[in-house]
Image 1 (cartoon, rainbow, N blue to C red):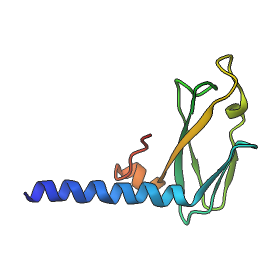
Image 2: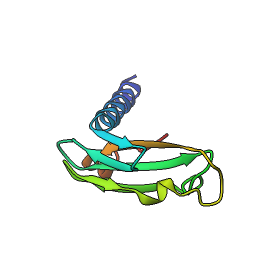
Image 3: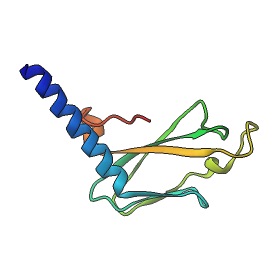
Length: 105
């Protein structure tokens, strides 16, 4: 019983961490710029759905507090579709590095 509670609590903490990191990161689809207003560094992973350059491979990068990053290839079709969407997830960098937060779509 105790092991199940510990695992459930760990999963709950990881899901809160992922949500809070995503809450302080914004993505502008017109300019393909990610911006962090988080208090600590965040790891961001993204992919494209129904086309784009990141349909099979994902991209991952880190943003420091207050930093923005332009992801230029997000606007490129790479020859596989005219319209696609961008899915992205974020974790606090320290929690990601320790395994407490998983980047999953």
